[in-house]
Image 1 (cartoon, rainbow, N blue to C red):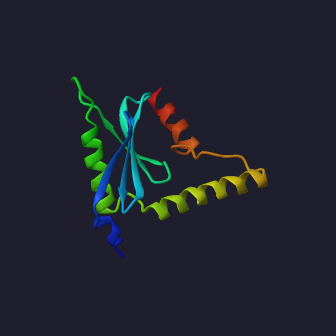
Image 2 (tube, helix red, strand yellow):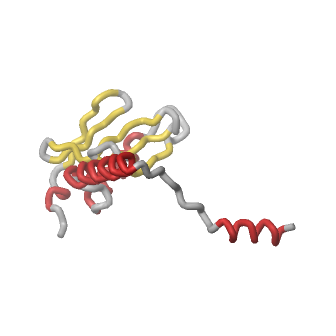
Image 3 (cartoon, rainbow, N blue to C red):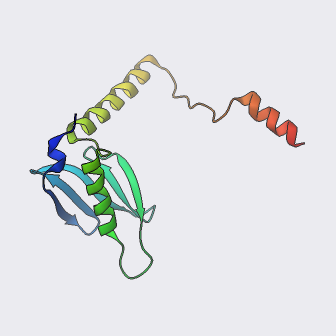
Length: 126
């Protein structure tokens, strides 16, 4: 089901030189923020999860308008979660992390490919 709020008026509020909030009916849906470390504009959902980076244009001005246009597009096309959904995803992630810590389970990242396959590739190259 499509959230009809996505088609409301999206207002852009400049918070400071490096932060903009995109709101619908006074509720923040997205934040566009300059990332100094990445030298790009970061498009975040309402819970602060980064969804995309827009490289700045080489020249006098950084292209914040391109990032804002992309954030608006993401709101309308549904790729930006609603504020309630973004907060629920954040809370679910926190709960899962808390449960892992309480069980004493270590965080394990899957190998990009099975170890035996990587070993076989390295042996094939020699």
